[in-house]
Length: 229
Length: 83
Image 1 (cartoon, rainbow over the protein chains, first blue to last red):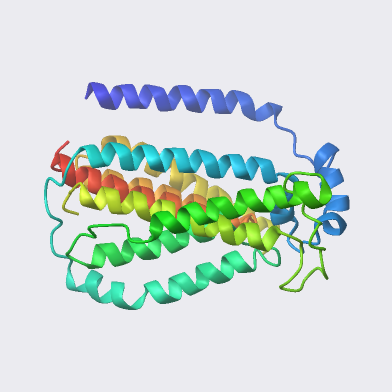
Image 2 (image 1 turned 60 degrees about the vertical axis):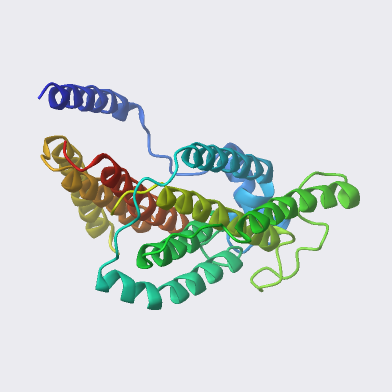
């Protein structure tokens, strides 16, 4: 009861703050500043038909690298903590529905995710969302099997290689164009074709592989420490 | 989609999310609360989709609605399920 009241009070305070903040929000009809500049020059600069990915990976490449590092630290910490507590309970047998579905669905899910990642410079998509979708397919496989994976196999190698690829692509830009994560040194190609937009597709693939292997590792660790659901 | 329809959809989704968020507090069963938080994430994902942020919508759907919900479920399995 006290917890409920406490939660309600927290929600109400938050709601009050939001209501107070709303009148200050003015809808912006047109772009200004950095947004205007990116929208005007992004297409020619990055060669990416999808401007969002162009901004995230090319203009904000260093941010994305930092994001990947943060995710790496977080997943390392989670796996480290979870391996300190050994397996307490074996997972229960999955229901028929789950075990049957887990034999069929992962393949199309992974196919969609790979498309999502590989076409991120052409249509909505990106390495991070695609990677999480791949991880959810692996998760479905884990849920559908009553056994527990004893080792992560080559997942850590994939993760390290993907991270290394990201960094090396950045340094390649330093060597050839004098700028870390320079996007143009491979040529930006014809916008709208699959091989275009400089290093954006390569970095998307690297991010996708890294995120997918990290999340899969975290879930394998969770699965191994027990819980019955 | 016409602007009016879009506004109606966005507002009704927002109201549903708010109601679900308040309802989470009053759930007797932990399982219902977990499913409701998953529902909130899924509604947010639909909202992002309505606003043409497809990549954000996919991230929200896979992380918020699937992965986070499952972590909560595993946690519930670990602590036994009672409030």
